[in-house]
Length: 173
Image (cartoon, rainbow, N blue to C red; front, side):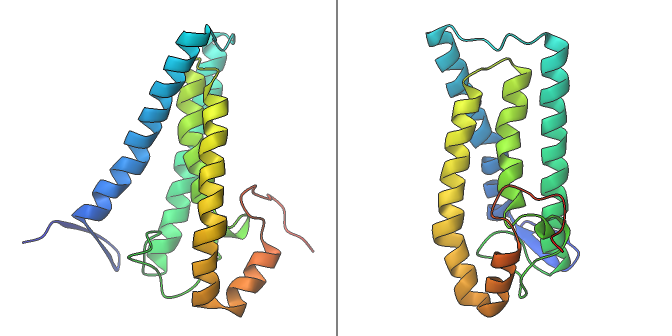
């Protein structure tokens, strides 16, 4: 008997759950540890009062969780997951995907920045920028090429109308 969790029509197996745990906890934890080491080595601290750090960092973290939850639920509604080995059969352009093509990657940056700010880690801004650059390169040169091949003109129209990673919170007329 295989372990799996059912989300509507989508069945998520053990390896998919383990990948999710790695992306959501291990990678940000590793980056936070590196930031802590860099700050200790260089004598850096984020000089904001504790209540400001907790408020700003907590808000970023909560918004990131909400953004990813809304994004993933769109994939489930379309009968798939964000993972390439369990894709949807149609291009997802609704929900957060109306505002940017890669909202989950935006949320991942918040998973670093939010806790880093809460902990007062100044170098988290540098590491979050590096993380964002790595995800942007993967999205641009790997993921979007796969989507272009898979969905053709439909993806091209979506690509031209929707920003890459910086969400636009208004619609063009």
